Image (cartoon, rainbow, N blue to C red; front, side, top):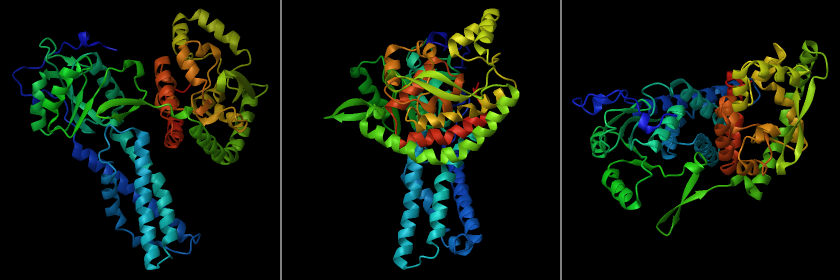
Length: 488
């Protein structure tokens, strides 16, 4: 990571206006239009799917009754506006999924209530089916839209960052990596004359803090205050002075020790408090999570068993021997559990690894950082590589879920040598929950992330767990598997 003192030395022309110094200017309008079109197309697709099912005779109704509800295409955007879903910038994807589900369900339930009042029950089944399809199609449509457009210069809303130090650099890095958030920094402002005219992670430092009023007149609505070193006696007047006229102002506190944990605010009689969650450590939430796993077990077994059987046969053909193997990993309470997998390595894998690391110093460094190798000599060609890249080798772990040793979603169970690289506090936190077949780390960074990324993702998951988060991770898992990004 580049520090503030090492900001790019390219200078902006001091004679050019503030707006001209900005490389790109995101468009809130274009972003909203893209999301509205995505939502409408998803609703049309859901209606078409419901009509298709109805036309097959599975439901005693046809397409015509469904067309009576075309007014919903006008109601949905209004409902999403009220739910704060346009343009939904700076919103956690789990929160977005929850709001989409609640708003979509509310519109369909209200429509069904209207049908019941007028006594027209015939098309209600089609509408229910359309609502079920919409609960899937709308979030999927939005996810695809963000994947397609999040890196475009026009996506998101312009954001001005107050401050050009280490905290500002961290904020810029995260917003650039997570472009789907939609907050696009167009300028940094700082009262240090030595910084003005430089760039911080590609973002121009265009002037002093007072220039924020110029951006306000140009229509910028979002500002981030990344100056945690300021004392309250300095920060409060700054917020009052420059916060007027900005509908959205975010103050980044000096909380590097709990970065990416996710906190909420509490009003302590007029005093601001930060509430750090430990959701998955709650007994009620643990019971809810077990119920989710139980509901998923039957479909997982029905769909997974044929795949496991075919994959096991392919492994035996490519590399004779038992197609399954168990690894000892740390589970709930620090107890050792046997995690089942399809075998993707040669039977003398340990010998091959030791020889390879001895002969390849660069590979040893890669192993020590990620505990994975881009070119692993232990992997059985073709079938082993395919199973690992698709993560299908993890499927037998559904039996670990059946035994109550694992969950479908949670921190991945690591071997002891991997856990030894983490801090004691983090290891204790992980040991308080059941490990999972898939997790937040896998669907965000996959195995490209180093130990710091793993620790941040797992900590965030444990402290901010909800059923919505599990649904989000499960929904993102197929995309992560298909992309095979970082999978090894």
